[in-house]
Image 1: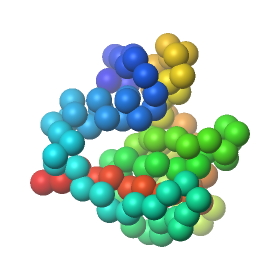
Image 2: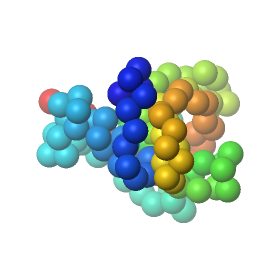
Image 3: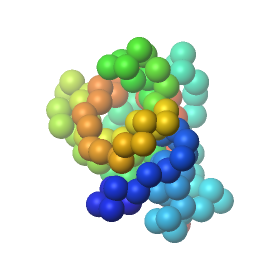
Image 4: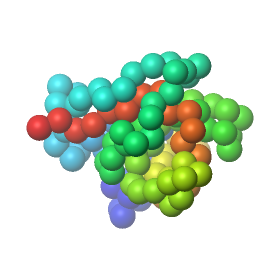
Length: 113
């Protein structure tokens, strides 16, 4: 989807949901690894794996709630990660890889078997 610049009408959540579904991971096959709320408690970042769908507080954009797919750690000690992120909000821009500070992750979803 990112290679082809696929746009999804809706939010970051809608894009990540579509990405998981197109990858063969229907909603029934998804496993919630950690669930809290935007006020915490927050997940231990040691439990995050490549491909996980994370809900987190985006400190770089008004401390808003955001969903993105974890790719890899850029600086694990500082909790900075490369993520597949979709802006949404009707901006009509394709997804991109972007670094985020993951100190407030409140939901982790993983593809099940």
